[in-house]
Image (tube, rainbow, N blue to C red; front, top):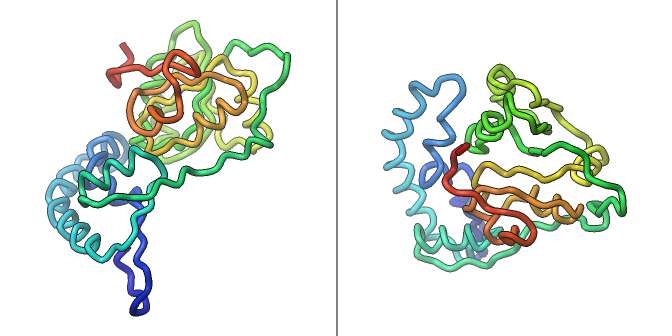
Amino acid sequence: KGAAVPPGALHVCYMHTPMRYIWDTGPDYFRFGGGRWWKRPALSVAAPYLRRFDLRTARRVDLFIANSQNVRDRIRRIYHSDARVIPPPVDTGFFTPAGSEPSQDYYLVVSALEPYKRVDLAVNAFAGGRRKLLIAGSGTLDRELRTRARPPVEFLGHVPDRELRELYRHCRAVILPGSEDFGIVPVEAQACGRPVVSFGAGGALETVEDAVTGVHFRPQTTR
């Protein structure tokens, strides 16, 4: 968005993640991690200028593309424009149910370990309890989350696709503690026949049917 293009070319914009931080998720993104003591004040100072720049460049857009109705609504709210929704694809030939094999006694988080993903909520909810939580993924909060976690919480790091499919297939449920623009993980989990426990916001409201294919929780706390 805003890049130089040949005259007469179509300007297409997706409501991309970096600019999302100046509108919606900045406080969550800088809630944890190194330098948060200066990053949050810096964002509060820079955000008005970045928003004005974002709005100026958005005027050049001929077509907005969103990956969910959630993002489409945000584009309408911020840019006062409509968008075409093109949901991300999920390989339902690969992500399939396990058949008659029973689920195992663990819950699963599949996520980048970044502040806005709110994996800390899942860690806090399961640490020291009786229900096992496996966390697949890596990121800048890896060390911090491992430090605060206690059994039965386990970190698996990066997991190859075939191993991830088996984790999906045999978990009791997948936990989605953060708000996603779309959220590919819940769709992959449901393709594998597993329910999803998701924070009731963002793309999960479109992909997880409450009390049918999973449950939504509010507020975004461990209680």
